[in-house]
View (cartoon, one colour):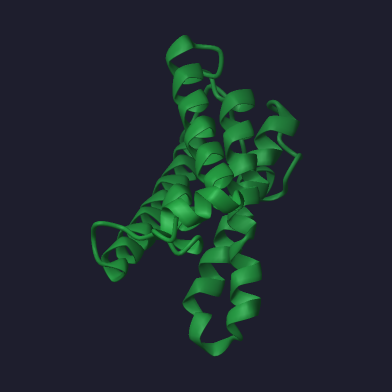
Length: 158
């Protein structure tokens, strides 16, 4: 979703019609939100590391790895705020919606750091590979998006 969002903001020319790419972007964002909610619900049922709803909702208040878990709580709350703003997109100025939507990069950074620092798999080689691939893919999308030559290549004006 983040990669498609970055490429959509660059006015990239896709093989699929733009509306279809936007729908895939939206679907992936909603799916991500559902998995974040499932993740939170499963943590409430976890008996190994007990965490209360209050500790989950108040960043940095968890007794288990407070900084790392706090990053995840902050990411989830920012994600919810962006999702709510998406619901009211047509009622707000486009410029305001877009600025709120830029918070998604912060959500992705916080969530990635949360996964690396808080997760029980954070030190496993397979997880390091997945995290590195995610960072590389999003980093490449941003590098291409921000470079003049990359934008020309993406939009077909080179």
